[in-house]
Length: 362
Image (tube, rainbow, N blue to C red; front, side, top):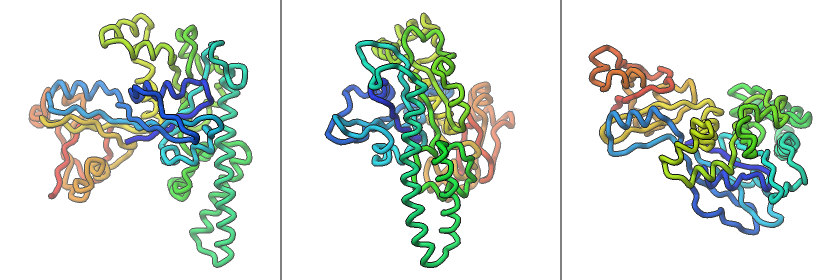
């Protein structure tokens, strides 16, 4: 399951978005300290819907994204330091910054004015400063350990952390460093926030919905969006609340009137999924049709492990057919008869939309 942490300044619509994404009916609990509320959203995928219609299984299981939101009261921390203190944020695969762009005099902005570019930069600086504290503390400990006797691995860790410190002191997030897989592995244990991919959720004013495609430019974020592993998705939380209260038929008609092909919530979920470079493969049958999330370039044997570690250990072959081919033929048997159902080995790189049956030793 993919994991994402939602954060943002007060009155940005962050908690309302969390409730909408996770279908939470109650407002998040409040306490005297920062805590994490966690909920799960389904990844919308028309391909899984069509496969379910084709196989008519007992279960329909979409891929999911786990979202975490920070709850607190009064003086409780709700920014970068709180995220460092909360496991669902430290362990998140990506961070979602909910940015206020709507104008509502009845909901005052903590800074007095609505300025999305200022808020994005301020929160980025806060995250960078929190990471800098983590890196400096670790470097201090490393220097003491290295004086006791040089361990080559400790020296490599010191070198990469030195690069991180230089970047952070220059106000540069670690996601922009372009780290090698080996260096990224060395940093993984520190769970640095600015190393995580970032999705800006631009919470628009209702009057700006028609210009949603230009939201980044309107917000003055063109330069910021040129950074690595950074994307943006515009929504209007006020409209999303109205959509969520409608039944399916009225929801479709209302969205059509607004010129929306899919809800903003679906776009947030899909953008979170895409930001991380994840794809879906499917398993199908009479019992279950299911979507599985894996990173791009995942081998068949590792994809099998997403289902169960025993399948990966006992991997023999993967029976693979593309989604489009299966839908066109109408059955796995027809795909087999036309030579479209292939046998692939452990090193086969799974493609988005592959329908796979794993053969394995028990």
